[in-house]
Length: 476
Picture 1: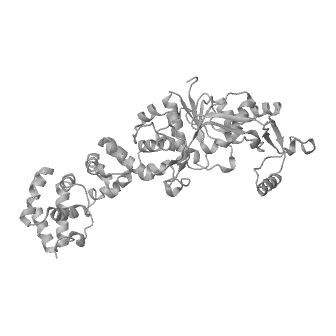
Picture 2: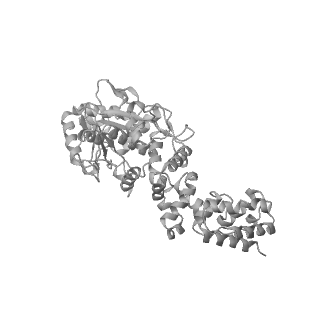
Picture 3: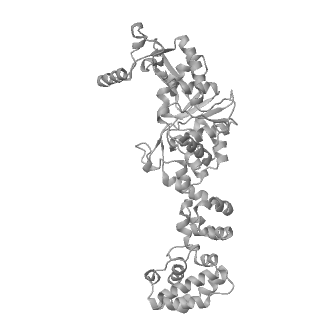
């Protein structure tokens, strides 16, 4: 690398971060970590009309939840702050003055009504709207004390603006396709185009990784860099994230939700990182799930794909379940703390860990925990019809009586199996039938973890109490 890698994630606090934005943040963070560089959070809050209360806090919380905390930003500080664009107006105005003096920026007093009429005329004619430079005519110029914007003058001589995109390869646009865009608005706030160029220069950003929807804007940014006499960063435009069908933009129904919603649903941060990294990137192997150190080591720009990525929540869920199964039990128990059923709080952590050991292989998301474990913490409500689904009531009653009698004093999985399994032959019942009535009696459901493991974890007292309660239900 010819210079230090400094990348930025620059969201607008106008709502929660969607999957595409979070993926962009992750790619920037991985590139910084891969190169021992710096990951900057810069907040583009100059569109004051669209700001949403609490959005900035949500953005910061989302990054923290995924473990991709910035090195510099509003909370961390840094040598190139402030990192809120609304606090950098003097910087923008100073640079704007330079371009006004050079003639690259000029004032425009056109009313919104006139501009709307021009856009409607262009639409009716089937051509792209381009400002007609009305205000460059002396007869239409007004006092600078009157409300006005500053527009960037696209060079009159037709030029080709091109760049070597780190993902797309060589791209170019003709200046005849570009409009004299607004750089400074009437409220003295900069537009995105102007502010992001100034900030990328001032903050020494080396690489700009952003969504491919910004490709048509890049020529404007390159012309601004040229007008200032600055070197532009390396651009890498990332592929779009589509819904699972691959034919439309990702929607809320498909999984376009906030990071916190995924965390609340029981997805692990490392699963989200690995899954998001796979949306438009691979290292050329068949590996599907990556640890974060593996992502950092292998992440390079040349492995980012050009084609759109398809979001598949089922694949995310599969990946999440795989990583849940790989977690050491003690660590998984810590992660599960917010997800246990309410009644679990009355039980010691060691008991909860024993319960968790029985369901770890079945967990796909942590929020499945209450459904899979609630009977370990509260006696189930027993249904006579379920208890006698495969047996006549009298036979079921006799079986339960025998089961209660043979329960061992020394309580372990092996002694329980040694005591109960012989009843299969003694009672002339299939093992599945006999074990089924025990399972329903102690859990209230027909599907649960292994019978003898469940009896052992429940303990002698609770198991006998529940079997006796089932017998009572069957006793007329």
